[in-house]
Image 1 (cartoon, rainbow, N blue to C red):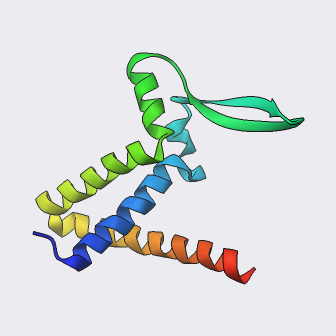
Image 2 (cartoon, rainbow, N blue to C red):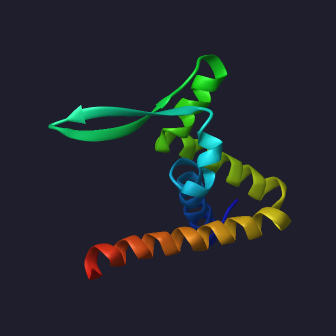
Length: 115
């Protein structure tokens, strides 16, 4: 069974990995085959949003890559199972992601309240 510290690491790592896959520019190449950028005009302003493209598995992956909640389940499952099966390797990856996730949370907090 995981200790409290390990749960916190997995939570923060899941947050960061999910955000990395869904929002970050560095992984846009991964999302590109599965998502289309759509434009709508609302009150005279252009609003852009992502929509899954294609059919079948391609559309399913697009839906997954555009849903923070859905992707969160899969990234958390991946990290948890990795932690259980390959703790020697996954612990380092999880710690790096958890530290990056913590930094992202702090940056967002300070940007909102300090700037």
